[in-house]
Length: 427
View (tube, rainbow, N blue to C red):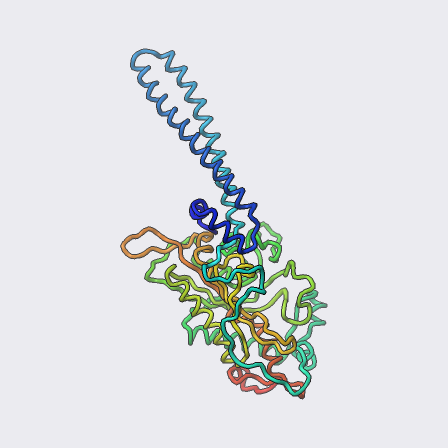
């Protein structure tokens, strides 16, 4: 959530930043109206309270001078003033609540170095790694390869659960499990992350904290009982909320967490997109990276987190590129995002496999996660960062397609073979 005082004091700068994000200005106009109303009500309530205090002193003086009737009349005025003040304060609180609700619907403001543009067409490529393989045979996609090898079954998954679900079998299931273990080992052993296994169901407070609510309610799978829990759309939700409501010691930061979880998304608004195969599923697996750090270190931590995610693709020898997202393509809670895109031969293009975002203090304000510097300083909000390290299903796709052979088999990347019991090829 944005700092209400910052918005109030920098209204035109916020308006320009939201315009760069293609965000409607009507909410900001209403914010101004509500803020003016709040100030008016505060002024009137203060004036009424001042008159009450003055009248109370006058009543005491009247009683001391024996003017009981005059004092009683003034008491009636004070009683009426008390009611008026309560009404004004209630209206003020309603205006503040409306402002808070409005702020909850405003996205984060982009960092100064984020490219300005309407959508993904304005994203800027900053680096590439590896060279896409040149095939001497007709390239097949992961669905054809997986089904012919018996490691992917979409038809029976549809029978069991409907569209956008998949079943992996045999070496296909083993490959998925190998990828999870491989990613977790790299992030914990080489990059120093602490592994955690969080709940896969979360409450509404947690979803609000990492900005899934209120904006993305329709993209969640909700339980129907009174607890109002939802299946996690990403491990970012439970892991980032791990320290919600806490004041951490500055000396204990940064905190680096990694977690494997299944993820669940209704994919609202994606009708007709990526309907074939595993690219866009209702249920998929990810290894997530989360960082909680001091504000002055978040940019450096962002670069390192992105490099940690890229390292997985380098070890798997999968070509990729990294782009910085434009203002019109960034996620709701991000102030800056790098997308890592892996090469998908059947589509002859790069596809996103990880979004690595610096959220600044946006999520920390929603979660009320703060830190205190040495010497008893006033608590400040932490900065939070997150990224996939990586999306497991899309990594599975990239391996199957990039390592396909002319005889229909799939070679296992060398880095993964110890996790596959030494298996070198799926055939």
